[in-house]
Length: 183
Picture 1 (tube, rainbow, N blue to C red):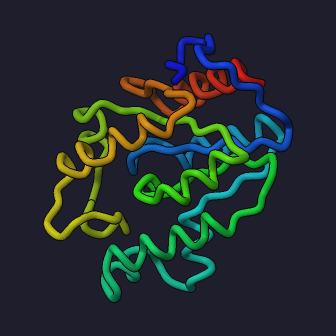
Picture 2 (cartoon, rainbow, N blue to C red):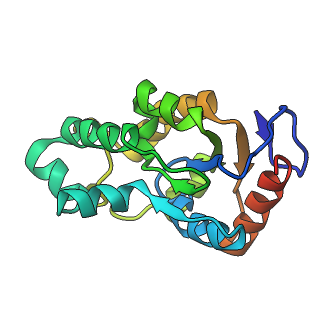
């Protein structure tokens, strides 16, 4: 795994057709910095949460409310396994790491970049967890969700970008430096 300090500790070579896949907790900035990163790199952008909502014709929270978190997880896995894009910046839903098959598919033609936030920073950003459309066990709070997901993000990350204390522009700059180590 490459910690973002502007240098690579893994031998990755990003071909133009390789996807840059952003993973991390909700509120880590995957969508907001991902779309700008895509513009800066002249690559198309895909947000899997938006693709699911568009394809399903409803919000993520509506799926959870009507069918449960397991249903949203299955839908997310189906959408990710159906991706055939090349050369994209992809912002994933935070729960994508629950599916080994989905992550294997993303890593087949992608470099996974983990936007890492320590828990206090995440907690400061988090708003309305009950209505955000987040896959979690019934009654699972933010701290438990964080504890469950962090090892998965670490397992699948090719590069980790530390986002603690960074604003949007600084996060984008750190992400750009990390990606440039493999371009």
